[in-house]
Length: 394
Image 1 (tube, one colour):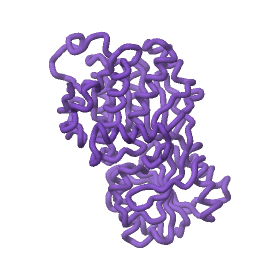
Image 2 (tube, helix red, strand yellow):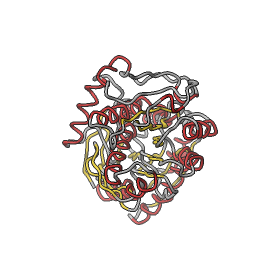
Image 3 (cartoon, one colour):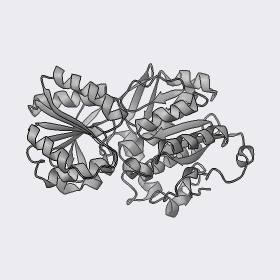
Image 4 (cartoon, helix red, strand yellow):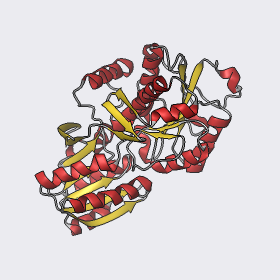
């Protein structure tokens, strides 16, 4: 049974598009529960089940990824449960909102771990939330963080599977330098930890490639007036603008960038860009827009062909597009399945140990985790209307 209501004891959140009218195709999926319903944890589930609390953002700038994230995690849970679950335990998936004030999200994860019997926390949200959640969880249950991030996460109990700047940004910078003769770079990002630390690394890669940074700024989350940012970019005369803006902030910036006539003469390279954001930007505003990522929906591979077909069967052809952020939720559960199989237990300590060094397969193909760091094929793509065209893999 699937039911979606007030997710995470917080603001009411609309269900992912395509879920409610296609619920019969996911009969073997996880149970999406509404925590805080007055029932004790022991009464709400059998111990034969594995309860996973997935913290997904449904509001604010990153909220546009919420529906696809929810769909992707539902699909992975359904597939795993059809195979018999994880070490024989059926997945129960509980969705929590990772948006809004961070202190509210921290309260949600504390309730999830302390009162709602969550065995594992998973999340695709901004790094500022990750830092707050890991401090609240304090290693009491494993915490799997799925999306692209700045790297360097070594806290006990945290497992990361997303792209990091060394493998994602460096080859794209080298390619734009060599093929597009880019020398002058302007960096603009949202004002929080992922852009701060990513830009620190990117500056080194630009210098090593023989380029120079001619400007940098950080924009408050939720900013939708980019006039002054664009004026500074125009004055700096860069060859490339590297964009580390999140969600709808990236949408409004890229629209404004094209509307003011900058897209014809200045390249753009984005690090948190996917099909969901591209759809928001619109086909007329994507000229000279590049993106580097471990996943694109247009990748041709057996794993991705199967994933895309399953996604359409489950949620229909008009479901939210599945880009890298949404798909990372599918990867997170596939990763957990592989780690549990290697450890042959769901006990936290051996599970976490097994997750530090493993190779697993998801829609991205093979992903190698070595000493807690994820390695995968990185693809450079150029926007082509409302889709991407792959240029090369690194």
